[in-house]
Image (cartoon, rainbow, N blue to C red; front, side):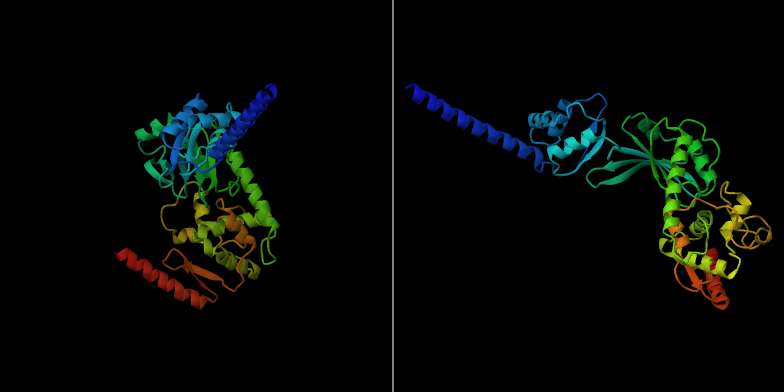
Length: 384
């Protein structure tokens, strides 16, 4: 009898262990497999929250099938105490495992409200925008010029929200004075920017910032990125380059940056200046004349006068030989690369073609015809 009872108990234990193993395997499968969420959501995890609150929120929004199973998985993976506050874009079908990884890894929030300070060539613009999870596109809430326009109420409202993200978007071709002046107008930043960085030494890029960040430290990061780009471009220079040092490359790249906003044209423009330098011809480029007038401090806001084209300044390439002594703006990576890897060809001239690009020419006769066409386009536009 005892043997029979022991045998039955052992059988029951095996069955229980088998069922328990099956439950565990099912739970693991549920935890790691595709979730029930049909369309993306923005999950906000406020400061001081916990996994229980998060799991309830996720279950209410249909992102997970079981709050208790979610919490068990979190405990099993030993991430209960690793929850990070923020706003997270949870994609459709995200597994519990993937969601846990998102909200415990932290870093920059991936949805919610973003305030972007766009430092452009003509102005700085602050944008308040919010990501629509359904379309994964940002919806603009407000925009204004800091220090000039009235500050929108939504800007002040979102500044008070701890989950709001901030970014500085530095356009290619801005001057160092413009960057420093723009940072001064950004009221979320602290500290004196210090000495203005040398022209050309700030990398046009996107920079994640936070309220209270120091202006001088942000400028230091911009300089560090530009040094890396300068070194990389110079290391990969071609034997067609006319410049003989990283400093000359930076100067030429800044001129290329100011001459064209068409990415596909940069190496063509670079070839024109390279051919001119190799032949001992003056560069004769208007942006250098403008820099001689403004020193990069603001926008000229009008056409160049004949007296300015003739005036001798260190940057006036209608007057001086070769390159000017300093860059005239902060060039991006594409212009740095173009400066040391120009297109092959014999172009010596270019002029605007009315489409936003340029018409290139080998001979002065051909160039003069292109100039005449451009003047016709200008005259027609001015008459309308």
